[in-house]
Image 1 (tube, one colour):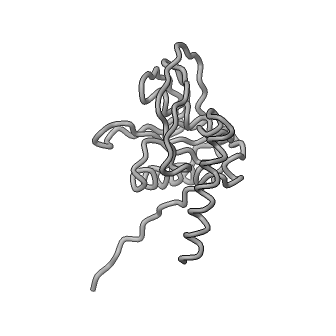
Image 2 (tube, rainbow, N blue to C red):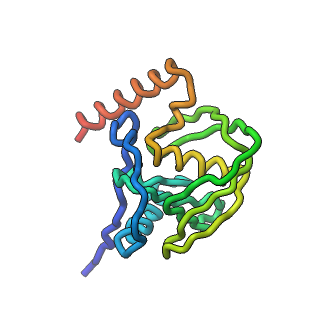
Length: 176
């Protein structure tokens, strides 16, 4: 008898889904449900080959982010109710997003940030970030505010991306 493991992969919303524009609410208590969400988000992010995922992207409007920018995917970082305490410098980097699959654009972000958040156990911690980690934290925190990286590009480019993704979604619906 063969037993298959059922994956608890969450569905990632894709632009221009309006649910991506909803602002996330603070997590009141880090409990078993939040820890399960964190675990499911990590599993979803790793399966999708991403480096970050905000709960908003999986249609859960709570201030929860998971990140792992390591090459070996062995440095998971969970941020609950994250806030940026300080930022400096400006860096332009090419960004992509699991909610805007297949598209990459240059975005300006702070080069160095200081962040406070709760971890998976509800304990407060602070850290400083730069390079890819700083970009990723800022990108994911934007999701919690209902903002996408395409909001930083020209309206014309954003409209072109929206049209292409709508066409892909229509073709996928016809095929299923």
